[in-house]
Length: 450
Image (cartoon, rainbow, N blue to C red):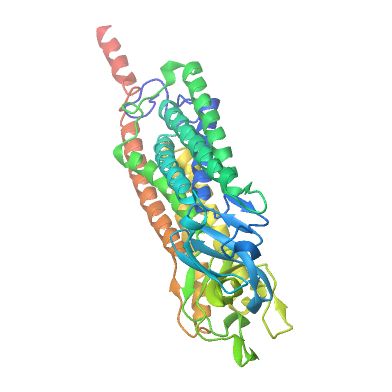
């Protein structure tokens, strides 16, 4: 029987005879997880945390603080929302903080926290190269030599990123010591898994029957399939980044939607929580609303809250969480539906990545990923459309939705390319092409000779 067009030894379309052993398959799974860990870490705003920052320049009143690669967040009292909440800022932004004695300190985050931006540059550089290595490894996830090398290089990059961040974390002065956050944990776990994956790939190279191994020239995968393989990696990366994004919809004036204001309550003739001019943004996990913050001399800043976080507006006795405040717009079940659709899309594309040279399997999985992405988009756009009806200023689509839109378009293109390559594969196989197509001719020759 034929073993696929242009192949000898193994059959790349068979999971049992494609020249890939258990260790090689585990290495493929590991590479995908490491790339996901690194991407989530880059988006995380919690690489280091402290319960008491209190380090001068107006930060004495700051309790909890978190540090990420692109921004830092300070927790302080927000009278409008009746409690302590986070405000997040870019390290390059000049932030004016007012002390108890009325002194103002105007500094960028880079100057306020010594060594943070230098550490960020080193960490980012290491992770960019590591992500590129892992991308190549995932594209060729069923070529253990390539995947093993890429995972090993990504392990080195992740280890370097960890060391660069720990150097900053150890040297930063604060009232309470900094502890590693989720971002740092993902990097630590990531480079360990990458190292194990690299070792697993090496083991697979040494113990699998070399007669079954297929290289890039004889594995029967055409250019359409190879491009489709790259697109599957991009697909789940796009969907994952989209799910992690903090901006899915935003408006320059939330108005009375969500009842996050109170025009009837004033102190000294000044309305504490006015309903006009408060910008807001929404994500799948939480929302941010402009409000006056005492730490910044009652200047307006984006105060970010989880949907499950209870808030009591100044002058009101009503306490509600975000789900309840936007219940009339169907936020909870639509955000949940969007999240589920995004996660299904990530898993489907991730499986296609793992079996990136199985043409029919990848056609089905890429199609499923595209369909899930469309459902996720539809669920969120329904919420956004209904919210617009209550806003003083129409909302605009944020980066999260655009990432998901890009994901389903790439998934659809990948499905088409895989389908084309599968049709070519079937045509060549049925035509007797490849390594096993000469059986009948040999029998005829023997008969003629007799």
